[in-house]
Image (cartoon, rainbow, N blue to C red; front, top):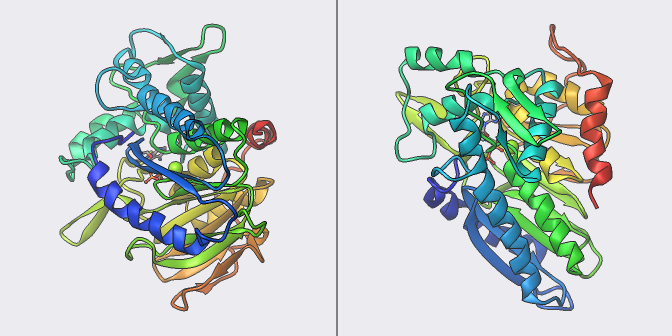
Length: 376
Ligand code: ADP
Ligand code: MG
């Protein structure tokens, strides 16, 4: 995960997003004054805004939970459980907390679901590129080729009996940056709900989760960022309650070299940033971890196969935006998502997957859909 190192970039951008979100939602509409708190965690700016009369300690507890998750899952420093798992790659299994075990288990389900488009073992490649850090680079081809054979989610072994994780090859490494924020948002929501919160916005660096409705009973309005435009400039609005909306896109973290853009979403098959004419993908569902994992996944899969996959998942919808300013979205968002920027036009979703697409097994689909059943 790209935690902390690029906090500056993220902090600047997201603060504007939060401001814009506040304007959209109308902070002075409800019966009680909202209480908002912000911290830099999981490599981004996290803001929780609660619209109910609850003790501030409830929000502190939610942040303490997110901080725990950060400390367990970051790839920075030499302390986290993920760092320990990576250090013992090819040597021995490492016992981990249920947090880390469950997130890795779900990440592997996403790998099965997406035929490896989502793959947390891109860790060494993510480190090599260093995108969003102060040592980002276009690595020599031979360096990428040397690390690519270490990328394979099938070599992550989980042992349910003792909650241990083993990476089978020396030099392997996992990176939970594509899923941890979603998990943390779901957990923060759970803690807030236990503390009596019914109406809140959790903004984890643009990964949005809304609890309940606005205090006046109307739906929240969540802006979908216009790619490569100032934070808070939206191409459309999702109007909803009790849902999460997560966007992945190259504009989040990238650098330019000789006219080419290099960004932070890696194709596990090539070791290079995904080049697919998509400028963003957004997932809409009841579970933020599903949104986070699948927004990264469908970005890697591309429009045709990404749409084919999302159509198979109950309660999950997607929005794809292309570099031609075309917007494609699944039918579950009819009446919920509205394009508000006239530069963008809706196009019908491709009817079929690309040749060679491997549809996921029903048991894998069930494993993902089950995440929605168990969330409070
Ligand atoms: P953001 O963190 O900007 O919200 P994403 O959720 O799309 O963006 O996650 C991107 C992060 O996920 C990268 O910074 C990296 O840590 C990790 N990652 C990159 N490529 C993949 C991939 N193919 N599968 C799983 N994780 C990935
Ligand atoms: Mg993600």
